[in-house]
Length: 263
Image 1 (cartoon, rainbow, N blue to C red):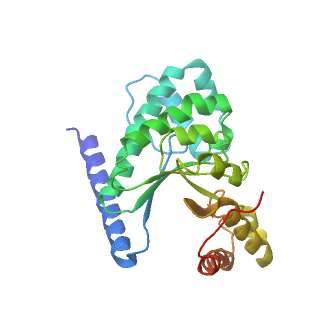
Image 2: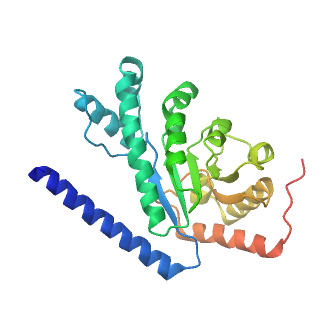
Image 3: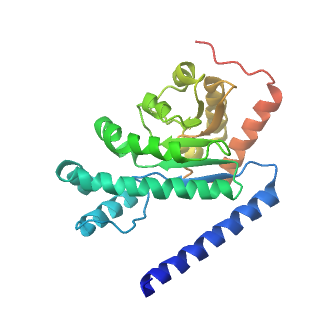
């Protein structure tokens, strides 16, 4: 083993030991509150391993671009000109992502979620060819008998493809009709979403309450997980987040039998 390899191994061991301690501390301190593990999906992941290829510089450029989540120009160039190299990278990331999620499950998290936060930058064709197959592979390798997995693909319109991954739950954005999604797929998969994070950040208290209650009505009760369409903006007032939680709890305590909103 080379000195450089030894350093990498030591760094990885310290990293995983720290993560293990963090998870155990949270699980023990907050039980029975659900603890969810997370991992970036393939296009969002900001990591890169050693590749058996002479295209290291190009691959590194693609990974930097994916991580910054603002443009996919270089990535699209590789999709067009060197798809085999990109597929090789995505297969490598599939192994890393599945392993990372399984590691968190082994440490005791109750559920895991995989984020594809640049899904909205991919065309329908790009998502079908370069994202969806690897989402399926990651999910097929995750220990779902021990913990369910949620697939989050930001503002992805092709909900049917998300369902095909056999994830236990899918998270949907504002670009789809939540009631329609629950009606079509609610017997096959749990559905998460889709309160507008812009409303949570900038809306009035009334706006936030209305958004939460509308989401609960449209999602129905069975299998619906109340959440945002995407992450919480950093400048979102904490009192707005607290109001979302309180509104959900108040609705739940006052409605033992939730029904879908009338058509």
